[in-house]
Length: 396
Image (cartoon, rainbow, N blue to C red; front, side):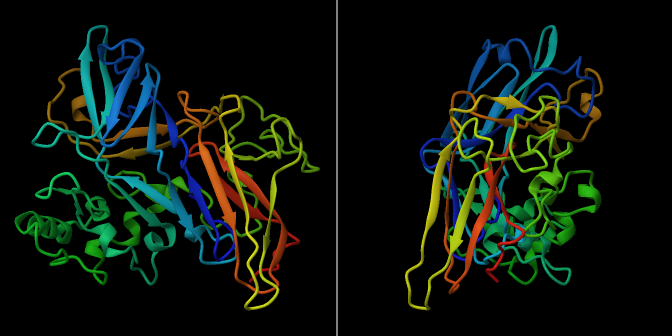
């Protein structure tokens, strides 16, 4: 979720429907061959569709893709504290307890489904999500500043004797986290924080989230590598992070909009004023005229349900380590140690769901005025991205 200009602004997603990403299945294996390990055809023997329960939310997949959803009917939002677009304030929502079920099945030896593992009572674990900002993972003076409550084991809301992973579970130096987890499990009714605190960051360091070239020492992909806009200035065009040119991605030299090339690599696209319009959507950021004056609010709630689905060629992939309960003897699958998650780039409804996206731009800065805040959207995660016009950034 990207930073919204305005020190009292906010972005919100999924309040009325759902937000998520369409995950392509066929190229999700980094070990073995795609011919041997596929997920097409009968999806776990259930034909073309599958209902996957993610704790409290539910989504529907098919034989070639599955949808990751954060929430259905509730939503998630991010508040800004600065006037400029500051990608250090970009927020990540990290799913820490996904389970992947792998099945051998006849002519297509391996297929899989996603969800959460079962607890002792047979019910699926709740989806374990933490929210963390880029600047906290980047840290300062070689030290991360992530809130310790995000790092520590997360109390399981459905089982008072169980804990779900905290963000520190993925950090390389995990001894403090493991000690904290053992203590928490042994003393579930007592306060946490016996081994992890804000100062020691539960053993986490910036390198756990931002490795060289986006890859960590253990071969996993760094979380921050999924945001190519880190380091972009307030007036930088997000489309410059695309693999294809501005024109191939639908923006002419005169700033008018056209349809992106179907073969182009366009993760970020300009939001038109209306469907088929050749002008980009812009918004106004305006502060009060005096310290005690009223603050204008400029807001919009949009849905991509009426757009045609358009899938671009390039996808965003990131690797995670895995461990198997069962060793597969076929091919090289058993000897691998990495799974590649692939998010396809698409715009439009996901498996029948629309993505609801909203924002409210506000600032308390007296006489702040910008009338050229340009709005884009991330076609992978279906969230808004903003750029301040080069001649209108008058709000410090």
